[in-house]
Length: 190
Image 1 (cartoon, rainbow, N blue to C red):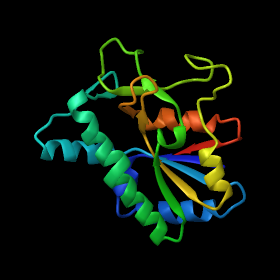
Image 2: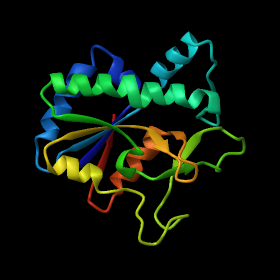
Image 3: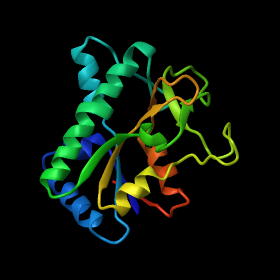
Image 4: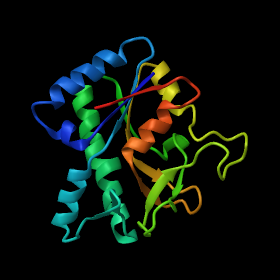
């Protein structure tokens, strides 16, 4: 399967979205299929603004206070993901909306790699780093869906392997890890 990642701006643009969805549908019908990973930062910003919450970024990442993570998850894994699924299904796909934590598609934990505490920001757990040697950072869920003719649409919301809470994970990181999957996935960013 080919892993394709697109930012929310590309998806929300009325001039680019139809062509993107048509291309994804076409690629999903090719041998190997497609896994689509999406961002959605501007949709999150608009939602938080409507709630009177401010968005803060440092070191290139969104600071995700515990009081905002559920709202961010509601947008990325909820309404935004379902709009993408609906658009792809209307274009002829058999799209299935997921987040990183569904079926443990991609294992995540709260990050500690920044100088500041970014709150509920997650990172992908690499194989062998804080995991049993037999556990991979990705599960067989996405390749299984692709093999059965579905187009997985994956939001960048993880579930912390430590406390079970939601994590906001960089979509580029999530896509890159999925593309390194031992099942042979390849990455294309848009």
